Length: 406
Ligand code: FAD
Ligand code: SF4
Image 1 (cartoon, rainbow, N blue to C red):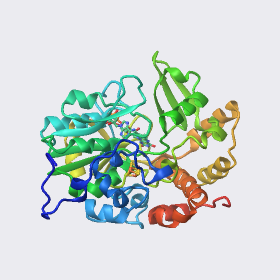
Image 2 (cartoon, helix red, strand yellow):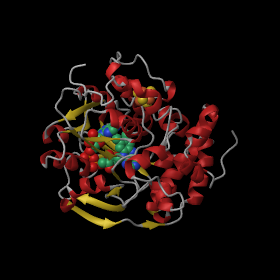
Image 3 (spheres, rainbow, N blue to C red):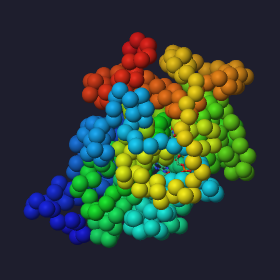
Image 4 (cartoon, protein in one colour):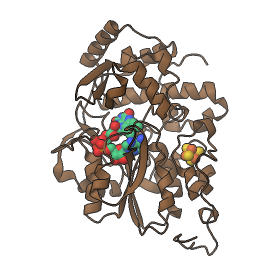
């Protein structure tokens, strides 16, 4: 196969024998497939071992990548995964048009400029639709910057692995969400690379492009003009419209009955919210409003952060409040698909925002709420796989709450 790495074993490795299949021809995880893209590359040969929804392997992955698995008796690691360091930060000056302040894009640019990597795996957008993802191997800072801002839909990032053989790329920075990173880590040793750096994003509640439309139609006053949105730490969704105006909708005012079926089944069965296999993770939910939240998992992550640290205004992580009662109430309300009238939703939102969890405690609130919902969803929809698919750290968290009957 032109450009493939000769196998050190003498015989061809499975991906060297495999021909990339026609897109959409096989996705063994079936309804749970997150369209991570692995099956659209020749690395489909490893799908049974690598797919995050067929063979989740946190302990093996963490031990291989970070040298140890997370310490379940350490509350921070139980929730946020293996970590050397956590901090909050803002990029100064921020990058115009980025999702938050643009730390991720700046890191990608610096990784290229410094010669650390030859390319950055990131996600641009379709020229026809701002929310349709187009994964690329970016070779220039401009191409990395063109990938800024979330495309809040399932993205086949790993399909571009197909372009690696013969590309001359030996050192790669891959930016991605948990399911993409799990599959990438599982095939890492077979990739024709000298160095792989992984910059992770936390991720929950992703949707197909059609699901996104249902969400926008039921949540925003002007769905067709939304260019950016985020579920923020003030318990509201912030929509930005193409005319520059902002709209906020309280979480508690969402049309839960309609939205229960919008999230992708892959995301309803996922427990990798904080991207356990990445070297460095950049999100927001463990930081105060307007700041980003950074977790350094290992020495490679520290080397990545060093590329931009002089351009960051940093602060220690903080934690305030107690999430537990709010999580328990949320579990029951979600299960009954309660929809509050908007005035009441705004009132509840204001009260929770004033006295509710902040910083890392907000992160734990969000993780508890999603893990309990997902454990219940899995037990109801895929009871045969629940025991093996819910990792021990998630089970420990879920056991802290009372779940509705199956
Ligand atoms: P930017 O500089 O704007 O760069 C954004 C990067 O995201 C780009 O490099 C691009 O390649 C990548 N990207 C865009 N769309 C996708 C996609 N669909 N799949 C994979 N990569 C993509 N953080 C939290 O703390 N809590 C959450 O619940 C959470 N959910 C998220 C859900 C999704 C689908 C995504 C993509 C991100 C989520 N994040 C979440 C991360 C957060 O929203 C920001 O992306 C992150 O903090 C980086 O912000 P930034 O300004 O530095 O990014
Ligand atoms: Fe293949 Fe990825 Fe879907 Fe699993 S999630 S079936 S690896 S495309």
